[in-house]
Image (tube, rainbow, N blue to C red; front, side):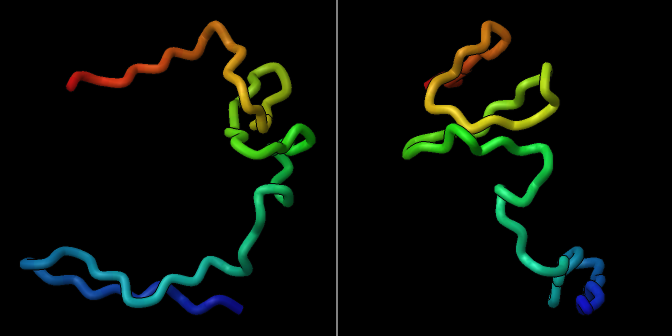
Length: 72
């Protein structure tokens, strides 16, 4: 069983987590809302609203996606 979260509160430093246990590690392939059937080197996860899943892909093929690189 997982350990409880332990924290220290102080007016000067805020919250300091000493131990955090969330259970057993889980891989992406074990998540029900992730489709890795097209997994390849360089893939990224892209959300597909029609399937309500994240799909691995090496290309962005969605007209709703905008990439903003910011200002330099």
